[in-house]
Image 1 (tube, rainbow, N blue to C red):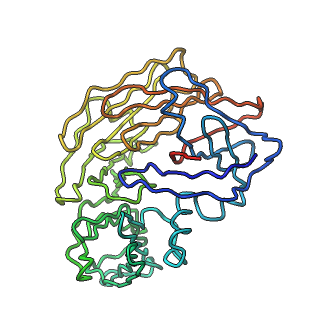
Image 2: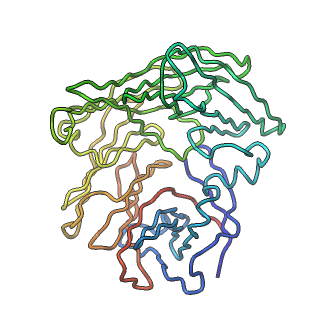
Image 3: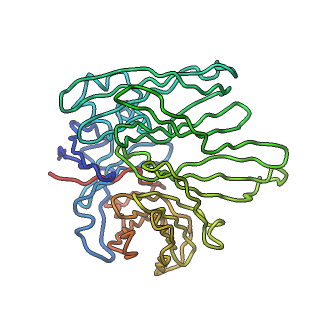
Length: 389
């Protein structure tokens, strides 16, 4: 029987509700792919109210699968051409404002009183050195239901092939953008852009990092904050990665991690513990914590860095009951103080939920294939929601 769920997105401090209506399912009557969780250890309360949005691959097919403790819903692949689940609430509540906007989470910011969208510049490949582009900004006052739009010209005069936003937040009525420019030669520049929302004025465009490529070294810039969170994040964590161009596999030379405090505009370096640089299977950011995890055949190891205090906590070492055939972590998400891990165990899948601050395992459960489907399949977590009937 098809249910209509209210999904409470647990993607940070701002908690918002939305309803998913009329989900199209594949083989709804036969429930060919029916998964539920079976507890291995911990407390069921940590899984009872959750729904996991996953990417589900079987054979040559690809779909989204919603999995809760007691049932699963396979979303028709044709439905994936419509709006992502995380945007359905925004579209339902603010249909006029959302019309015509690219559904890219990094282009949005939302809090209790406002919803902001910043449009990415079009046809970036046409911008030559000495020219520039503009920030096109739409602001919805959610209290008055009034929309304001304005355009501010950038003062940067760089040549670039593509520009996009890695993060958007608002601090004391200042809109703050993490903007990346990429040129067709592979070089990258990352800027911290600050705009006064009240005066509609550009305050600053500060170069944070630059990554270039030469005959011996290739550099790149990566950001690690959650893609699905639309609210304020105090820290933006990123790294400069250097690779050896002379080695056949372009071996990693170094990762230099840094954290930008979006409230004070200060940058601090993050130094990894010895040996961790070669084991960066998973990197997540949640509020005040950077979480780095990796798996061996014998255990999962989780490192936690308190960004505000600039210190590493004792790592979490959780042993496996049996050796793993596939030690790599399948997928991870850090949200609201919890670290969610999915891993493959002998062709099955196990979910673990850790408390980031306390360093404890709260729940471990196996994903049960109730129909005993023999065809090889793969499941990866893409989002986590809190569910209410």
